[in-house]
Every structure is written in C-alpha cells, then in structure tokens.
Image (cartoon, rainbow, N blue to C red):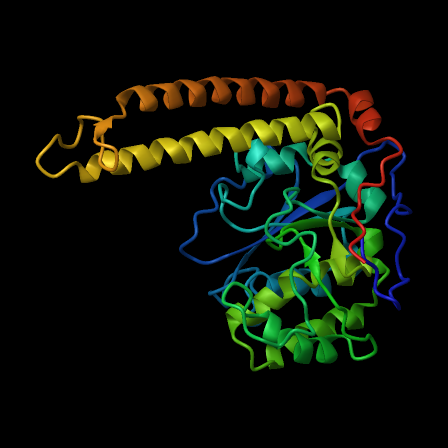
Length: 351
C-alpha cells in the first residue's frame, strides 16, 4: 500500500468504534436518476437506513445542488449535510442492483454485498473499497506525471492540474490506484477525522471546475482512497478482502489462486469453443455449411473438438460452483475468517 510522503493522517488498523453490544448503525447512500429503478433497495431486507438522492430532480426530498461528477456530488453532499449526525458506517453505492463491477463471487448482486458486508472490517480499517477484484485499478492505475492522453485513461492527462487544486499542500504522487468503481464503505470515525470544511472545499471544487461531469467523476474514482486513507494506492489482497470483507473464504491465498486458475482455464476453453463456432458459421466455399461442424481453415469436422471443449467447460463450471459454495459455507464461521487473514499483510507495496 503506497503512502504519500506527507500522508500520516491515518492508521488503517486503529478505528474501533464498537458499541457496547457490538451492533453498528449503517446507512446506504445511493445516487440515482428519476428513470433508474431502485425498488431492489429495501431497508428491511438490507438492514440499513437509506439515503436515496435523485440527481435530476431538485424538488426531490434528497437531491444534490447540481448533477455533476457522477456519484461524487451525492457522496460529498451526504457527508456535508449529516456531518454532525453520522451513523457508525456509511456505505456508498450505485443505483443498479446487478453490475459488472459488483462482486462476481456474489453474483454481481449489490444486495448480497450489503447483506454480507463485514462491519467489523470497515470499523477496523476505517475505509473499505467494496470491489475486491483488482482489475481494473490495482495495483496502480493513474500516473499523474505522464501527461500524454490514453484512450482508456483519459482522466490521467487532467489529473496533475486537478490535484494541485484539490490538494494544494501535497506534492503530485507518482501513481494512484485502487479497484474501481467508486463504491465503498467508511466509518464515522474516519470521516470525522477530516474537517467538515474540507468536504465543503471538495464539493466547491466540483461545482466550479470546468471539467465535464464524466471527467470530474473519473478523477475522483481514484482519489477517494487518498482522502480517506492518505494512501496513493489501496489494494488489499483479493482473497483477504473476500474472506474478511464478505465471508467468501477459500482457505487461504493458495486455494484462492487455484480457484482463479480454474476459472481462467474455463474462460480459455470457452474462447476456443467460440472460435470454432465462428469458423463453422463462415463455412467452406462449396463444402458444408452452418451446423456441419466444418473447420474452414483445415477442411475437417470440428464437432468432436467442440464436444470435448463443452465437456471440459461443464466440468470446470461444476468445480468452480462447488468451490464457491464451499467458500461461502467456510465464511459463515468467524473463526475461519480470522484464521485466513491472521498475521497477513494484505496490502501490496507498489513503491
């Protein structure tokens, strides 16, 4: 975990905040448009209080001062307006229940993520990115000193100027990184360790900056970890994040990496099968056609190869499902969770 030279505000293992009965108050803060369906958000189901901001309706009970910066404006607005009465844990998420950037091991389901979120981990670390998978974003993502524009990281070229405006006393870091995509939980203690006026300052910057809604939001996607941890990069080990954070425990790093290797094999076989199917679709000129299983480059049937690949994929799918279910079962026991991360330095050192 790369730390800024002047970033000594936080120790990521000192927040306790435990109530006498071990129960924490939590709130889910979600920005959404008038067209978004948020019926999946049920406070009885999720066991959290709700703060649903309608970003495109200034007459809604909860709305930001302007619809800019994607989720950033709402996240900052909630903190500013409720700074003196925050719950123990603040959970910031997007409006879609199922999304590619949600936890794949939990079915990409936001409900599962919220229900399984370990409040103790949030209180212990102060800040928790809700995406455990590193890609995209970890172990490093933006290199602010490189000003050339990249198609996949267009915000990188804009970061140097924005950084000096947001953090005028802090030198420009060599790298910024955390798992995407601006969904995280933070403890009240961690929020209150930052002056209220600083959050007002951040929101004022968002209101004033000539950067578009898209780019101002993209920059903040890789700034939140700096604000709440003081670190340039924040990349906990995936297996530890899944186990301690959500109770998906494979038994340790080696077992988790075995699972990933099996999943990669499944994906490779699936790509090979798709390639054969595409070859079949093109068909040989004057010989065979779609459905014949003919390899257009070799002029031979590939039905046998396709059957073998299908069998391997089905076998791996079953094995992956069983291992995932075993991990969920193992994670139900708090002793297993503790044992899996005991003595582990789960943060990667980039520099």
